[in-house]
Length: 323
Image 1 (spheres, helix red, strand yellow):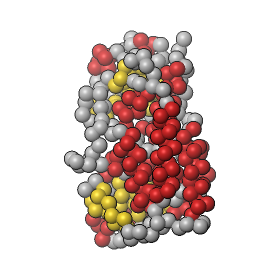
Image 2 (cartoon, helix red, strand yellow; image 1 turned 135 degrees about the vertical axis):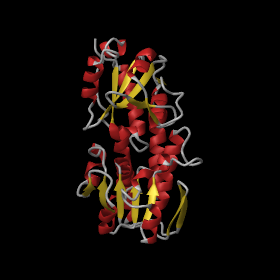
Image 3 (cartoon, helix red, strand yellow; image 1 turned 120 degrees about the horizontal axis):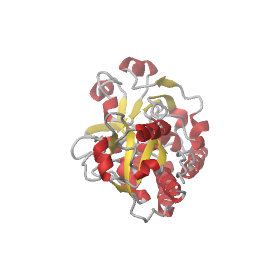
Image 4 (cartoon, one colour; image 1 turned 60 degrees about the horizontal axis):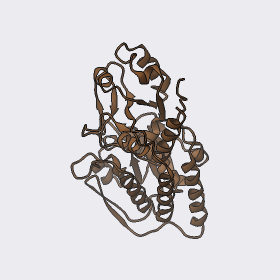
């Protein structure tokens, strides 16, 4: 019987996150965010804020969701390059935040908003063609910050990415935003939720299929896909590839003959379309995992380092148990 395929929609950890955010807001009425200066080494760029930023522009879903989870949503003046709707637990917190751009905003669009912090999910968001180069924005009085899990420079790129690294990023963002207590509560809740997950123990081998038609783009050995699969008890077929994601071939996937295929569900590249492609491709159509629909599904925003990763692990384990 085909496996039950269910996208990552429920968010038990995020419900706790929202409670923490609301509690932080309530506490903030009596105790304002820390006003101590903060200096960070962020992907090799020194970042200093004298006081917590009050006009925050986020780029990518992962950064917006983290800021909301830390209870600083009232300071977000705009978001850009979001990967889908907010999880239900944070929808109310994000209500009314304007979308600046479907992709990376231009430097002109950034300057028009007059942010004091641009919080980006990828280093590449800061470029001449994108939101502006970091040095240029800094000279204009705009602090730039990249989620540490996304750093690419040697010595800064996580190798491999771990949940400790992700949680350290929450703590650092809390310090930057003056929301240290909310960050500590968030980390404690996520660690507790991760500890409650019982990984699948069958030794199942899996391919994380992210995108691509002629050439598949899959999760490799040191990024979020590997971290999430390992947490769920899955053995990544491409774990030996020293990268976060990698391009491969349908022939190599067929040769690996995975027990399970993880499908990333995005509005522009749905899990349903991936299933159709795998069934129609003569190379993959004969795989047992395809014929028997041994799929588990995660939403795209959960596939990058952020507050959804723990829920992604739990959802994969639950879907594996329903097979």
